[in-house]
Image (cartoon, rainbow, N blue to C red; front, side, top):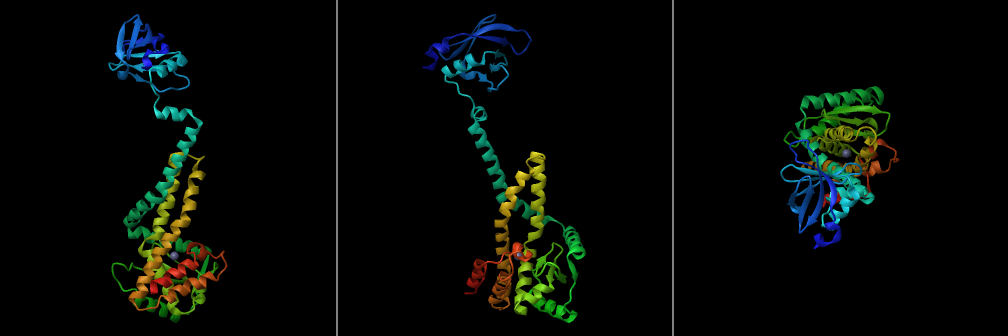
Length: 336
Ligand SMILES: [Zn+2]
């Protein structure tokens, strides 16, 4: 038995307090037969298992508490540690981890992993729930604000003639029959300084640039682009993204203050790449279903990404809607 070892029998000077008065008792602490035995100003014994030993810290005296609130203070930490060790006492794992460098690294890795997992799995779920709860009036303001900004900085009035715009709107209106899966929307034409682009704003505005219209091989491919954007709208992708981005910013600031904010925003940036691909797939699936419903061959949608794939990689549309051979193959496979 550990308590039979010589160290366990050695008595240790300690200060005893009864927990009710401030009176100090000078005692010695010894261990016999699984019992802590006090002698000196006061005599007392107590089974070791009923005592609570405070965690080790580098400065404070170790504290041993009795069930009735009385306690001991032991200044000689080294001797006490030896005594504890001899009696088989083990520090809580938290203390041991805090005291080892390897433990500190482990704890940091665990924290980063927890954050990463929350970002990847929890936040998208929360953001999705919140996005569907955002009132339409707020989404409309949000979308209008973005469009106003773009009109001031990036867009000019469309040079497509009015009749052409109307024809495309009418063609898409015939495909997007009103129903649960068809969100309210409006097609907005703009001339762009940033080349071929199309995106759906939370307001329901689907922006199509003249350059995008010109790039498409035929009007059914343009329908494919619009269907894809309607899919983003139906899934509220942009609103979700905005919520996620601001939630991470706020959460990081709350948790870490200034210094680590940069570190905390790195995983989101990395993960966004994967997230975007999932989101794109959802929008593609929506477009595939819509074209199918209308008997339009999916090859027209595939041609959208074939055309985009021929653009330079710096093109903004490519980074937000990456065109890949894998994606084209996936759309073509859906045709069979
Ligand atoms: Zn997209």
